[in-house]
Length: 214
Ligand code: AMP
Image (tube, rainbow, N blue to C red):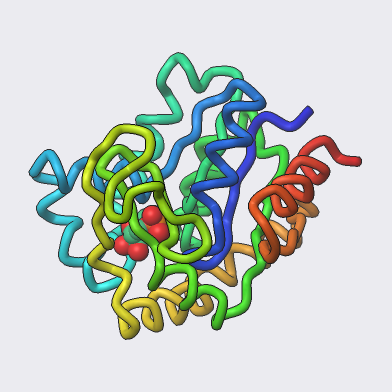
């Protein structure tokens, strides 16, 4: 069974949803760098203040802020037997940093959720999030009471980076910066591409099949 996994894909591709579920099933931590950054912003830390402008503009946060944060999380005791990294690495520099760090243990599998651009726009513009990380879509997965999280009653918000021009920039950055990362893993024979289209159940079935190497 694979235990050191990366989940990559375009913004709005379903990385968060599927990484979280898979992590629960495998009993390993879900290490979501975007969520960690949003927590730093919410807590108004030094790192959060430095990261926020980049995030709101849909740009990558500089490597010196992100790499140390991800490495520190992977060094925690609960990550000793595996982890699922979500949204990291997003450029070749980060992939190199991870390769150096993971040398002794190696990566098992890199899964890419493939979703066309139009679908990304639909998903992100309808997305509503609660401060504790539950995610809805106004049409496809609405909460029972509009604007309120089913799980914890918190008011839902729309992320700053969900405006159309910001989505466009995030897609551009994905193609320019993250595509070379996919090639990097493809050359190592670690990459599996999975269609991210369909219901969450359908996508999960594909993800689980890839992970169990069926
Ligand atoms: P996500 O929640 O994965 O969509 O990430 C939201 C935002 O956080 C991105 O648009 C970036 O600004 C920032 N971010 C997340 N992961 C990384 C990363 N590996 N490198 C640089 N910036 C990141």
